[in-house]
Length: 151
Image 1 (cartoon, rainbow, N blue to C red):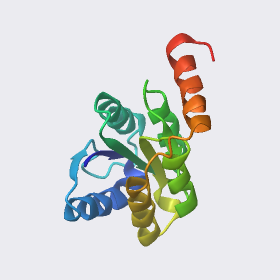
Image 2 (image 1 turned 30 degrees about the vertical axis):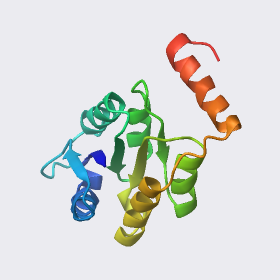
Image 3 (image 1 turned 135 degrees about the vertical axis):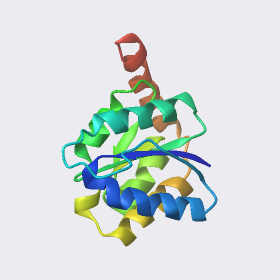
């Protein structure tokens, strides 16, 4: 599976751990940065390219990381075709895929320990979209607004 990942300084440590974990599992991972610690870096510089690459390849997924994950999710969701979900539990990671067909997840490094972060990533990647009519309808409403400005 193709996975794009980006963070800011606050997610840099877990980004490296997640990349190693994903590669060990056989995934093709593209790291959109940062590649070194800079306490003054800005998450949009890394999270938007991650989201753009994910949107450009509908078979791929994206992961954005920061201190809380909030700003990173907001940045990713500005990219047309991205449905980024802030995940903080196994259940929210699962529902992001099952109900929202999310293609990007956002995780806050300062909110969780390393083991839970890896579990959130694995749960997200292993869960399929349910394709229930009600979920498809809602996603289509969001897409219509994104593309046409009307629901």
